[in-house]
Image 1: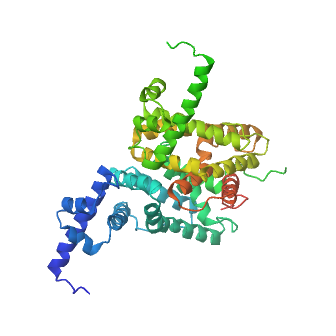
Image 2 (image 1 turned 90 degrees about the vertical axis):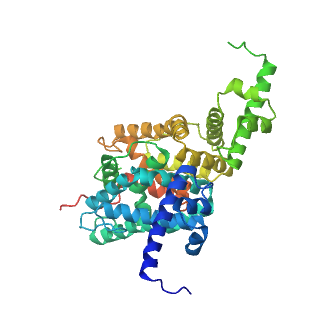
Image 3 (image 1 turned 90 degrees about the horizontal axis):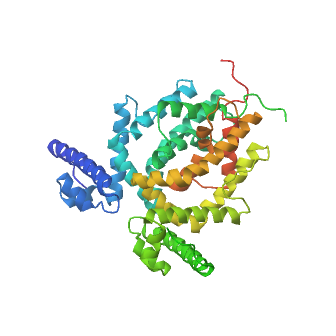
Length: 209
Length: 209
C-alpha cells in the first residue's frame, strides 16, 4: 500500500505523469514502437526509470494511457464530452458531427504521428495490436453501438441490423483512408459515408424483381 | 538494350524470378520491411545480387511484383480470372462472391504474413505506402468501381452515388478487421456488409418526418 501523498507531491506527480505521456508519444512517433524504451521515455521526460515502473508495468501500458489521455484532450478541445456520441434524435446529424471531430483528430499531427507508429506495430505485433484494440479502439466503437441501438428504438435503424457491423460502414472507410492513404479525408467524405450507410447505395424503393 | 534470350535462358530466368519472389515474400514476413535487403533476398533465392538489380531497381520494386504475382496466383487457384469481378447481372451475388475469395486470401498464411509486414511499413513509410496503394491496391479497387458503374447502368445502384466511395462500405470494414484485428472475418460477415451497403441500415421506406 502507498500512503496518501501530500498536496505538493500530487502536483509533482501530475507534472511527471504528463511529461511521461508527452515523452512516450513523441518517442514512439520518432523512432517507432520497437525502439521506444522505458529508459528512453524516462530520459526524455526527465524522470527516473523507477518512476515509470512505479506507475506502469511496461512501455505498452504507458503508451495506452498516453493515447487515452490524448483522445480525451482532443475531445475536450473540440468542445465535446469525451467518450460520448450526442443523441439529438437526428441520427445522421449526430454521426456526421462525431465523424467530423474524428477527421480533425486524424489530421492533427500531435495525434497522427504517434498513432501511425502504434497502428503499424499493431499490424505485425498481434498481442500489442489486440491490447490496443480491446482497451482503446473497441470502447470507442461501442459508443456507436449504443447510439445505433438507441436509433433502433426510434425506428431510424432497422431492428434486424447488427449495430457492431453497421458502424463499420462509416468508421472503417475513414480508418482505411487514414491508415493506408487510399484517399483524401474531409467532412464531405464522412458526411457521404453516413448518407450511404443509412440509405444504402441501391434504388430507394425495393425493386420488384 | 538486352538481346533476346535463348529458350534455355528464359527457363532459367523464370525459375530465378520465381525463387526471388518467394524469397522476398518469406523474408519480409520474417524480418519486416526495413530489415529486408536485396542482398538477403538474393542469398535466400540462391542468385547473385546483380541478377536482382538487372531486373528491379529496388527491394520495393521486387516486393511489388512478388505481391502482384501472389494475388494473381490466388485468384487462379480460386478458379477466378485475376483482376476481374463477375457481372452476372446480380450485383449482390457478384460482390459477395468476390469478397468471399478475398476472405480466403486474407486468411491464407502465404498471403497474410508478408502482406501484414508490408501494410505495417506502409502505415509509417509514406512513399512506400503510396506506391503500393497506387500500383497494387487501387487497381483492385477500380474493378469495384467498374462493377458499380455497370450496376448504375442497370439501375441496381443509384446514379448519384460515387462508386469510388461506395465500394469502401464493404471493402474497408473487411480491410480494417484484417489489419487491426477488430473482429472476426467470415463469409457471413462480408455477405452482411454487402446487404447493408446496398439496402442501407435505415428503414426500407423513406420516413415522412
